Length: 157
Figure 1 (cartoon, one colour):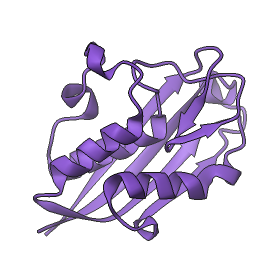
Figure 2: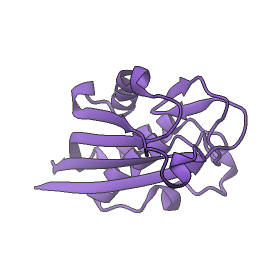
Figure 3: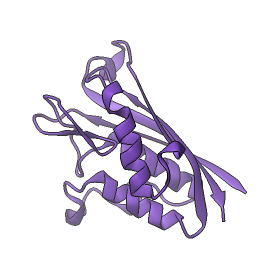
């Protein structure tokens, strides 16, 4: 049996520091604000996988008031999610999109795919990452932050 899940996440920009998406450090004047490294892409993928597996969401499993998770690399969270679902499910594929006015993400998409696939122990051909611009619309269009959406398809083992 196959199961699909969807994930969505957004983080506001929060001042100077490294911008992390899909486990890639991207040159930027702003980092995303959050308890962890605020990797909105990795968080959306985590929630898509957890949803497909019928588990609680990322915030319930890894709460933002846990001091052990402060500034944690989201690739570690993604690997933990992969370990949670792997006894019962095989990842068929993940498709994701990052919505950002700035910075331009095209040069980093392949590395994001590889990083997330490595964290999950699957081939990069099973992970897709795209980027799009909100074309100046809304908070994302005003470059106040970045959002990401993901869909995951799992197969019960």
